[in-house]
Image (cartoon, rainbow, N blue to C red):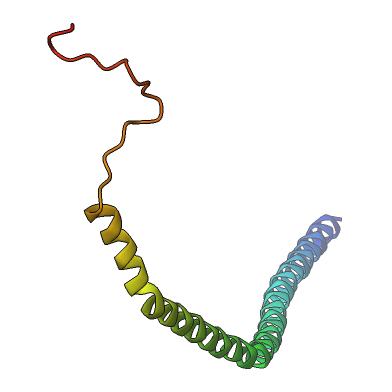
Length: 126
């Protein structure tokens, strides 16, 4: 009978060791699955990122031409307007200068319209 209880304890110890091995294997399996999942997610993210970058580059390339065309059109329009303004200036600068000189040189002294005649007093009248 003495052998029987120690044999039961031995069996329990072996079962406990076996259970510990199974638990350890399960933990290792779980850790490995997490690592695999992370690496797979990283690969999928990288593939998605590359696809979106390629899509953006294609979009950008398709509109880059129209942007440069718009810039050229704006530059041409600006040149035309600048030329028109310069021509107008050259055509009218003499006339404007003459008007300015007439205003400065030809002075006609007049009483202000708000000043009534007879309200002026000399220094001796005050």
